[in-house]
Amino acid sequence: MVAFAHNQPAAGGVRKDIMQDSPLLTTLHALLAQHHATLRGLSGDFSKLVGGVQDEKLTSCLEGYLDRVTDELREAERLLRQRQLKPQTAADKAITCLVAEAGAAQDMDVPSEVIDVLLARVFLRIQHCQIASLEVLQTLAEVLEERELIVFARDSLGAEIEGEETLSALVENELASNAANASA
Image (cartoon, rainbow, N blue to C red):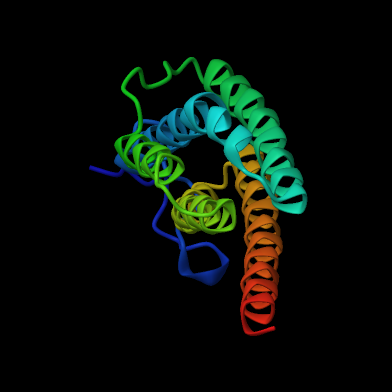
């Protein structure tokens, strides 16, 4: 049960003084630990697959994304330590499935351009999941007025959206270029 220090809602209708043992705070901490596990999976297993990408621009984009993920992972670890929380030990199942999908794409007997698009598609799916997850984390952090987590989620969300837009544009350009070359 959530306990309130007083019954007056804060601006915007959200009650400000939620006590530290609230289920909302527990949920926020679980979301942070889950996000950390996702980042760990991305910086480990998935980074190995980037080496299979043939297109230079796509490789650069994905490597930049993974560099950002590594930085974000360090910050998530700091936030977990600061709150004396343990990271999740289980691998994120969604990331594990997407890594397997990307690995299967690399093993297909198709032109490298097709493999690049398939790998980019997997990364876009990861980014869509990350965006949704970060939006929930940010919203809950705002409700609980956890300033550091608000900044973390907002910055991560902005970078994730920017990365998704960049990768989408690269894929669209790659597809348009392949279509133009095929019709020529």
